[in-house]
Length: 459
Image 1 (cartoon, rainbow, N blue to C red):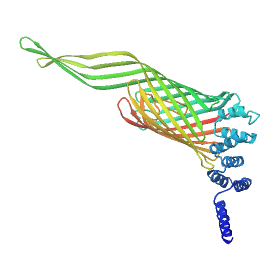
Image 2: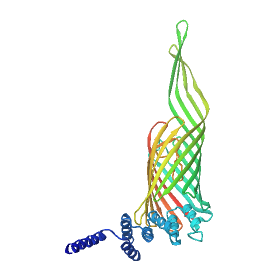
Image 3: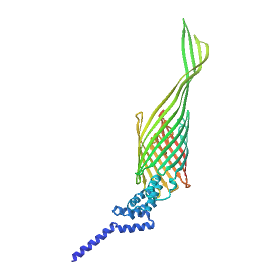
Image 4: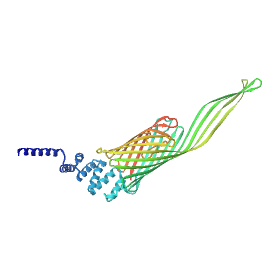
């Protein structure tokens, strides 16, 4: 009997120790409910995740963890737990959490599709009213480090984001660029349009068109000394010598127009904090230009008879040609990217890494990459950072891209943007951009420093 009591006592002690090491459903419910009422969101998220690792899972636990992340402004993480709880018991409270979490991450179309399905709210907010949603105005200057290779460039654009219906957003912008080179000028007018639509099965489809009309001219003029001499025998023993001295001016000029059109079709799918994008694109360039090449020689011709000067007269000679040329070329691209929202309290960090495979009609092939990151420092300041090789893109495939000179090959690009929100609807942005370039005509290196000021107004 004594042995049986000892065994029973040891069993109860071990059971109590195990119960203390592993959380129970009742204990987890009580602990998380207390943390929820006190607003200890960080401790609540940690306690809840420990319970889930121990296979303790119930509706209130998922709901409380979701609220903890939501209150810490970690909306991508909160959605995971809200949707899990919503699948067990679809309450209107949960539907509203999911809906506003999508809105606060800029996923307006996805939020509206969710609302249409589950009626999270009854009144449609301003985000989904038809018509213009935001207006953009941008002006800047790009400074060249070598004015002998390329002049400064003036840049401006005006854009409009509108919503034809709740599931479609339409972005349109017009760009104007002007550059005065040492020997010519460059003007470019661009138009960009993209249409983003969200499907019921969770896909974003974004076809886009980017057209640019470029007018350019360039003139190169070089002068050099000209000298010529000829002897003419006069029988039986005399000689006439003709000598010409002057200046020869070689002049080369080109003037033309380029039509560039880029067609792209982006497909992306969101999975929690991850977003995966596939974007094929094709750029077609039609260029027509006229080349004029000529030389003009002016000077004086002197004639000599047996060494004695007998005659002088002005010398003039000119010749040249004109050639009209037109070409059609294309550049193809296949891009893939993945983005992630990092779980940082109070300052969500968004990162995107993209890779591109490029090819053209001349058989050239290349790869490129781009890294972009966005961090929100409170509600008043957003910081954007981007870096890439080869400019990542030979063309502006979307509204984030800015590409100025189709005759250059960008080797690398880095940009830093500060986006301020001093007013509720008004948001100015200041951007610095550094580009390392190589001029295609003679392979000379050149760098550009750019400063842009952008104004965004939410209607």
